[in-house]
Image (cartoon, rainbow, N blue to C red; front, side):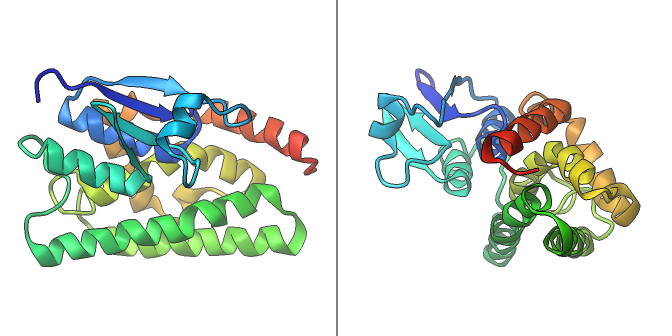
Length: 220
């Protein structure tokens, strides 16, 4: 839609902000990314997301849309004429939403526990994380992407976590590729897409961010 003004409020390290960016890039939509300081939230951010006060927020012609998966669905519906992300078939669409919801409910919390805990709790988180990845790998099967031949909604939901794998693996002392080679192969395939590679953070910068966050939180 010509003349659209699109802004994403987010942070460099947020996998949820990256989802919005990947979706917009897939659609070829020009947008402005505004980096938020979550310790000192901007008036614009608080005005646009007064309920949850969480990133990301998509602002489309002055109107806010919140929550990353809702943002991705909104982007897909508004700019539906290019690179559809959700399948047209109702059953396939329901399945895509199920797996994106699975990613939302499982991956972030479990990944956080890998770097934020120690001892038995960390080992349990690591085991759970690998189990989640194996479940996702099973759903992927031999397909190039979760939806089949085309990059889609579940891929957008999961791929931003890939730039956090380096941090998870360093703190958890494991290799995702050893446990789930097909899933990592999928991630590398996704990274060949410009929409993904230019949206995701540098894994080493993510690791440095987590190291500094652990110090700030007093987690040794």
